[in-house]
Image (cartoon, rainbow, N blue to C red; front, top):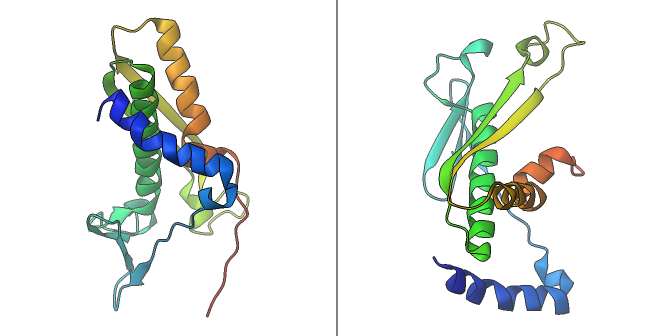
Length: 166
């Protein structure tokens, strides 16, 4: 997709969302099926079925996807798509690699130490970019990616969460 095609698709959406803000609010859905046996949950990603299970550090055998890895993969995917979208809109040719890594203390999730956090303590996102653009343009591209990446902003600003059982 080139710059003109991207703009052609986005302009009417932006105009609609400005005129009718409520139409910009969309609820996304995810659903998983719990395994009949074993410790896993199958999640439909839209393109494939992914079976998530325990990380080896929590007793898994590594046969299934780790949900922590999937969270980092979602961050990388979102940041990568956002960066490419912004680059396309700005007419910047760029390739490269997006990486995310995060630190977990599995004592928390296993209940070994109640003072140990459950979840990531820190997450680092990095970009290794190849482009003829200036360093200032690439810095601005990364800054815009930070500003507009849905997953990054969700992690940075915890949304309201609720749990329910039916």
